[in-house]
Image 1 (tube, rainbow, N blue to C red):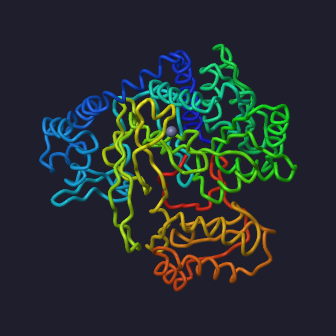
Image 2 (cartoon, helix red, strand yellow; image 1 turned 180 degrees about the vertical axis):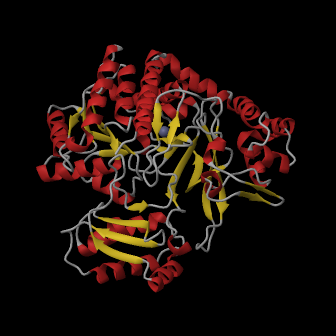
Image 3 (cartoon, rainbow, N blue to C red; image 1 turned 90 degrees about the horizontal axis):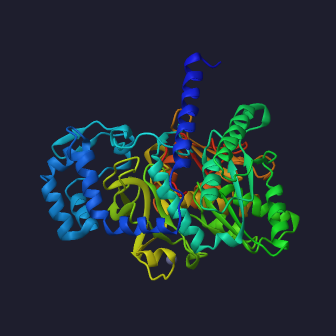
Length: 533
Ligand SMILES: [Zn+2]
């Protein structure tokens, strides 16, 4: 039963959301001139970052980063000199060597910050940007943990809109039929993306909404409808969501089929699993999706999921986005069919530094992020988010490259997320087995097998198989999974430990669905980490 306090807090939350929406809607709509702001931010990123760090770290006694700077013997003047002499990335690399960094466990408060001669208790709130107050509420997806609410300033939302405008130019979205397949409240993503399109002068032509049954989510449907009306009062053309039947994406495939037959190109903004399900629905209907571009985020676009979507004839693009860091990489048309992205280096600096991970014999090329914008929600300097990847110089000639985004990021994969019994294996290896090997061997498709870490008081691993997918006995599935895993990098030891402790349990049950309707191949109950959005 809801207590008066929880009703009050829900009311407060939606009041804040409405206030944030109004501020955002009254702000400057992104026009061609807005792109100049990106160029300017790129040119001045070093000075602006120094100003940000002075205000939010050096001026705050006891801030964990200030103590790390002190330990490294680096005063603000030294930092300025280092940036001038080595450039931003060069200075960050030197700082990393001096212990000015934050591991994922330290950031999440799972471990204190320990450097020689120093120990600091840590939690994420310590790294919030004190200069950012209200704006449109953005929930981090909370895929594998409690939803974390981050408040983004309207200024940052406008900055994001400029990225969307660049994307619209790069992909010529003005010539496309634009469809959103997005959850309704409590996730704000559907509402925010439809507003953002309308503000660019490219209103969405449709919105398929989902999120809970009518019986369980009727109040969210009413609130969504109310907010759509509120946005329209501000003169913006936003569609009302049409609700999809639970688990059925056939209406999306039919909508696209209709537009494509009329010779239109289609854009779909969605999470990765709805894109996979739509492609499957189109195949069942005999609809070719050639001419459709899925912009699929929120979940990792694994090779198997990419293949499943591209088999429908559609193209698929994914951005790289971590809730606490912000947008990191955006795709361009030349990167079609690849996993390469342009680094948004006006917002973020990315270092690659090797990291030793327990259970792996070789260090991984970990990514370390530094937030640069004055309105970033977190002040992060060389912060690890559990992903590895490579950075290289771009040879592109596209909207992004011409603006000065000269670095590309590729090979992004998560390494830290599967730690049953203290063992670590590359999450991407496990995902490949769940999405490819097991379906090939026993039937079903990507999304039918899910590994849940953290059940049985945090120590167990449950391998769920969607009922009806296979008649194979649990032992055979378990043997196949562990046998495949054994061959992977770091897998041999983990497999032995898990086999010995009986940590893996195979059950016939529907995969768990996250709060925003995502089904991830790995579902981690213990904590949450960086993901590809
Ligand atoms: Zn490009």
